[in-house]
Image (cartoon, rainbow, N blue to C red; front, side, top):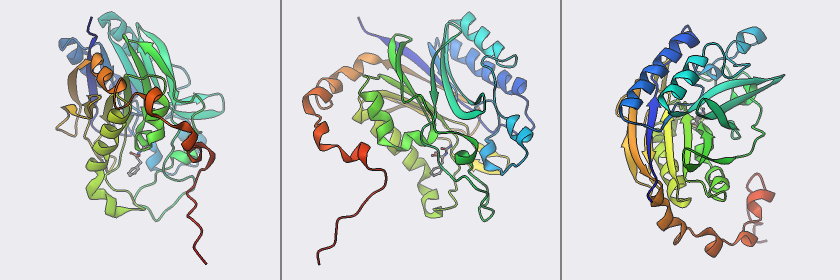
Length: 309
Ligand code: ING
């Protein structure tokens, strides 16, 4: 019996600094209702989907910074999202900034039947930890978040093996492979990706290419669907790329956003399309050679070969 999942991606346009959580949740609900009209089983929202991408600013005032984090989930402002999803019988993925005691994480959750069934905390934190005024804008994720401490968990939900990732995670093959080794069939991830990367402006023109490259590769090499959803457009003066898309285990993009605003994309995801890859070219048990891979976990930075005397 085939397992068809109708998956929706809810790309978000800019969220202004002044926009309240209630106003943002309204936008999320509009997209959820549209997803229902497409009979979606799951809707995926971007990274940090409740606020503007605040790591672009250096803040020293703890109270100002704390205002961007959720201390409970659901909260009063997000409860309507949980309630509507339950009423519509739709699962959802939501990215947000999480306060857990004195720890702060860049977090994503999967909610099914109104309950949180999976939580992930971003492992690969890009950017820098100190104020770097030379930059046109900051990228202070290393200052404002701890490294995620939940690993890359995969759970069985919405009839599939589902895993989560967040933004920069999508650039690292290890992210997909750790979930691939848990037989993941659908990876949902959101991102806020500035077009301009101050340390490497020569990469800017390739931003959308790199975005597609890494997600298509991760999908194909691990025989999984990948749902990559942007918060994009000019947000508080910073252009963030779009390129939201849903990718099949073949590595083919099967749904693609075409704007830099709130936009729903939808795809028919036949989970059995994973099988031909998992049973042949990416039959991990038959073909992988972990004994040759030691450096991947024992070494952090690259060490070049010794030069011949
Ligand atoms: N954003 C970016 C990302 O990895 C970045 C950081 C921007 C990296 C541009 C490289 C180039 O997509 C987040 N939030 O991780």
